[in-house]
Length: 261
Picture 1: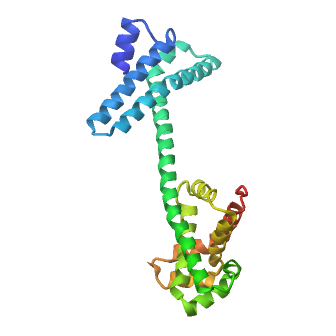
Picture 2 (picture 1 turned 120 degrees about the horizontal axis):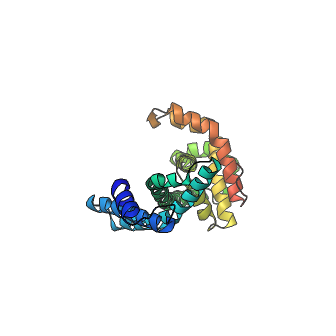
Picture 3 (picture 1 turned 135 degrees about the vertical axis):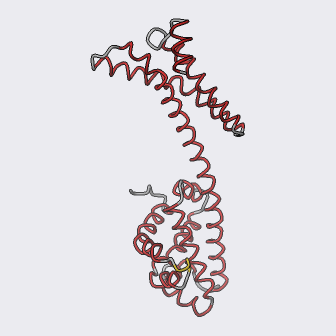
């Protein structure tokens, strides 16, 4: 781009540079930079989707390059520098704008992919949570399960005698949801989107099913008993330090409140 296209062809042969003809010069340089990247990706066996992203990034980089050059010219004028020196920096500015456009598009694509994955994760975990609640209703047909969930210690003690597998499944499901919340990208957005489809009663059930995390002794014992193998110290410490914060966030989200920082 620098020795051949900008210097020999545009500047010396056609008399064009970013000072005398900024739009034309930037457009040609950006198109050439985009074509080079697209060719590299094509030869590397990249998908058609990647090539379309290259084309989009090229189009975005043209006005972005012009904006960067305007800022650079203003800075050089303020510093008392010769604005004709911008010509030598034009290829650098084009590369900067191209990388910025690609980074923006890749970020948008990553956001979409992460949101799709989290929606699938939460779809499965929330379905499991409601299924476990249904099993509790079958086990306690004459009692209000919602009321039982308000006393997780008593409930887990009863389940330990009648169905320890169900009690452990409740804890595991709650830990999975906590893990998604803190560790998986776009988890908050995905959960908020899923909960918008829930009724007020279903949100109350979901929040109630998370209350088992308040039983630190029972949950800690599951870690010690080999829930995550021998390396349980770090996840156990994280659970003990952040479970209350997580339950507060869940209460706000299930109540339809904006989450506090």
